[in-house]
Image 1 (cartoon, rainbow, N blue to C red):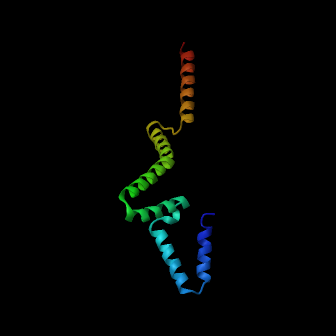
Image 2 (image 1 turned 30 degrees about the vertical axis):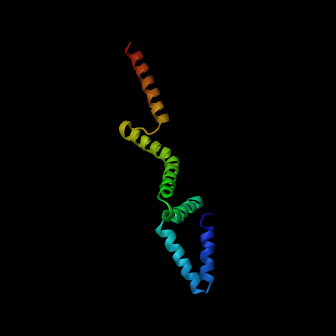
Image 3 (image 1 turned 120 degrees about the horizontal axis):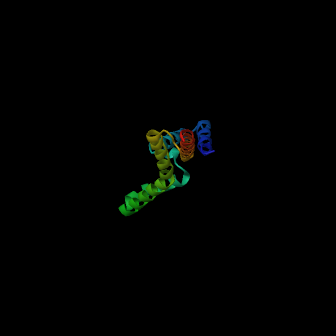
Length: 121
């Protein structure tokens, strides 16, 4: 789905006999792979292009756009990352990874304690 426009452009470049088109295709692929544009969403590519344009004009604009990209990245990835690391920490410290498993263990420990107290009395 995301690679369709790129694949169509590749087919057009390969079918073309124009050396200029093939040269431009190679430069486009080089540029996208060098700067990681192939893994970005379209709006991120546009913002990156704006950063390149504004880099020459004003330092504050570049700082603001870089800050906006960082904020969006943290907003989108930080909650899942924190959840993952908290589950891994719980697993390494206590032997269980999620709250459901922990609650089940606490319930069974409570039932075992009640059964033991009934047997001993």
